[in-house]
Length: 557
Ligand SMILES: C[S@@+](CC[C@H](N)C(=O)[O-])C[C@H]1O[C@@H](n2cnc3c(N)ncnc32)[C@H](O)[C@@H]1O
Image 1 (tube, rainbow, N blue to C red):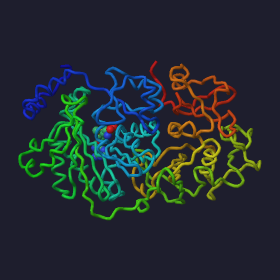
Image 2 (tube, protein in one colour):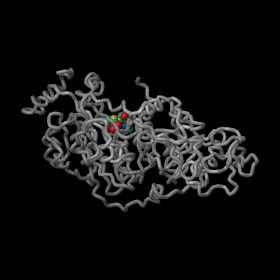
Image 3 (cartoon, protein in one colour):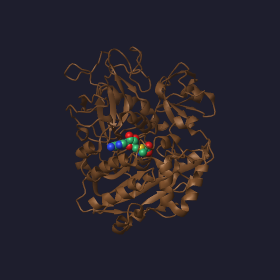
Image 4 (cartoon, rainbow, N blue to C red):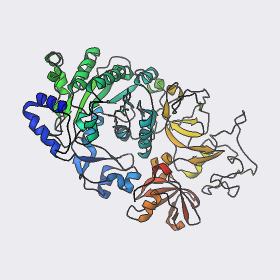
């Protein structure tokens, strides 16, 4: 056996499993299973199967999940950088499948970093409804935000909060809540030897206290008739059936939905907590245990908790959600100071949401004056015209047309809709939110985020640089090629794709560009790999200047 298992853990498993113990231990002689989940926000499963560089074998409990041979390195392929799949342990794909997310719903992923399950939820929502994704660790929310962005999620709010504070802001709000709880990690010993080494530090008792606290508040955030899925990657009964027994005692208006058959999942063991618990809650046998000796995946536990429903449902407009996030493009006037912060000091920062043209540019100023400081959209001084596709957005009136907000500041919302109108073939739903110099499209009204530590209030569209809108990388990766007036396609089998991902400038003749609506080749260009967006470049005179952000670049040789 390759893994050194803690003695106390082995003893306990022997006691619990009896005849099955030998088969359980034999599983540690096998290599763990590797998986990827196709990101259906960017590509259909069928289309991915047709271009997959890896041998794929379906995972029985997840339509979008596939085993890849052990030793495959899916993180080292251009498709990974284009967000076409998420590398995920196969068992970890099961909780979201049981959450039963429907389009248009409001979903909370409470313990979300680094974001595997959040990206899976986002794919189920397909840009509709709302995903609030949260983690209590500020450090881990950085990876969470990056993954939400890499996978082209448009409708997520990323928080760094305690469950209590979220519950205060969102009482009975969410249709679905996922609690992928912090746990002692026993189910991951085969995959991650460090978990076995750290087992004593993540002692079961400590985890039980955290889990109890998280479950206690989750129910108060659930809407009438909503569903909570609680999952762990541990075998300890106290963290699994024991925790759900406590929850059911405190919440008699919830039922356990039995796990589906035909997946290889085994039933829960309430008798491992106590005979009394087994007698009081036989329904706990309907929870699911995923065993490494019974399925091709690591150890997991899942409980599906369905609220019976009695209260009056809350209408979306009372929840402050944009009506149908994909379709509606409302922008609100609201200039309150909100207490949002992504920094440790959690200091008061100003988030202003201003009345602005719709993000599809339809409400653009009659004069067309968006030029600031004498600079056009691409930062060059006064060369361009106002025609679509010039890349320079000089005022049609010819005078310096900086827009002031009446308090002696530039109105940052002037250049953004202009960029959308000139450079994109898309309209965006939700509320336009300005946070410092960063512009977002948010699926929520701003007051919903009052007092919360917000890492991302929505989809990060770009930055205002003294009146110039600079489009963000997350904007690019979430766009379909048809949504940009200028795009260039690189082949994944060509060295140019890797060179682009490494940050190099490329030589690209104008004939290789795809141009829509009479756009000129010069300007921001959506760079695609085999037809899937990967980032921005700026084309001029046969050269594609690289806009791929430093922190995202391909670093291996
Ligand atoms: C099992 S991991 C989540 C993995 C994640 N769901 C995924 O699929 O990528 C558990 C997470 O819970 C977070 N956590 C721990 N205590 C928490 C709390 N009280 N509230 C919210 N998150 C918490 C940890 O920081 C950790 O990132």
